[in-house]
Length: 367
Image 1 (cartoon, rainbow, N blue to C red):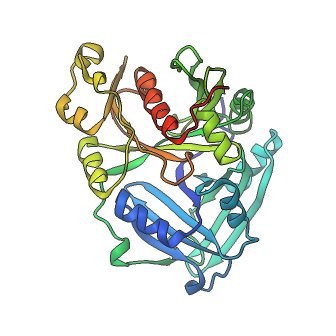
Image 2: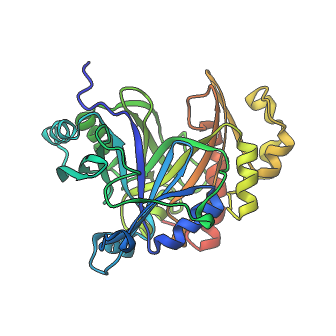
């Protein structure tokens, strides 16, 4: 089948935040990112301030509106700090826009060209779940630092040697009850994604709450977008809590890949990043459950790293606490040893850990 909307890679994620300067320091000092480019008043751009943060092949853009009526400022008021844009590099932004909108996507930005001394930067965009924008980027004729109006940066306090984060493994979205299937069809019909795997409320369940999930991937298998929706349970599920405090659908978490999760998580803990804590009994007879692994179980237990195995190998993963005051966006750190799954064997331990945090917030209530 012809790939009518080919995608090269995830170009970047743009976060809409209340204070981009402070957020840049947080991601530099706590997550090991380096600020490589900036756009704002000092570069004669008067609408927003944006910091490009880079580590490995990961690019985050942290943006704040400079007036209360700017769309980014309005987004932050509604959602708090959140992912506003999922940007995908494509060969042709005009074709991507036409192909997706002709198949039912709602256009957000018509094909646009911006030119400066470094060449032509092209982009277009469609609307995704919630208020999230899916943006198409073409850099083939642009040699600038990031995009027009951005200037290279070399500030010592925003530089890091990195913590070993290499790439974005997957991006998880939460949608309202009954909306998951519609968004699965959206990615299949408008962008040519296919269903990789699905989990029902019998797979992802605890004593109190449950959810359902389907994982969509592009034609190359490089870009994976799991989509979650809540399922009926005794108490408010983590998805319902997210939807309540995010005021609608959006990106729940971003999985960042590393080749050495022990070193990466150790470094992040030293910088102050907080992680979910699995129950101590999780590590009892771990190798009997998941088979032989290369990493010392004592170190995994000390750090709270989870392990799972599928027919292709095993993976190690851990999840941060929310990275803002609202219990919404968080991160996953993942190291794969052949496994292509998403840690299904860890769902129960993970969600029980989340429920313990919900209880502390007073949000694990009866429904």
